[in-house]
Amino acid sequence: MNAVYPRTSSLAVVSLIFGILAYVFLPFVGALVAVICGHAARSEIRRAPPGTIEGDGMALAGLILGWIQIALTVIAIGLFLLFLAGAIAFSGWH
Image (cartoon, rainbow, N blue to C red; front, side):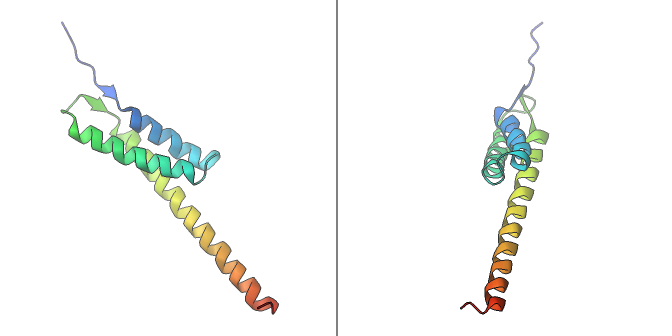
């Protein structure tokens, strides 16, 4: 009997790996790769016939990790700029 086993989306795996790497080695670039691959993987999984491609949970996890890392990066840059503006304003250096 020929059984058809669903395959796991490669993009979903890449999204999850780069979502994790965004916190360890590649803060912003890894997050961008995770978000892009996560969206592409979820699109690929939705377009495929039901039961042929798995990995939606991995793609979603990569997306969530990537977006959180991007938000943290934007907040860190904002706080740095706020600190820099305050330091310049209170130092008397204009």
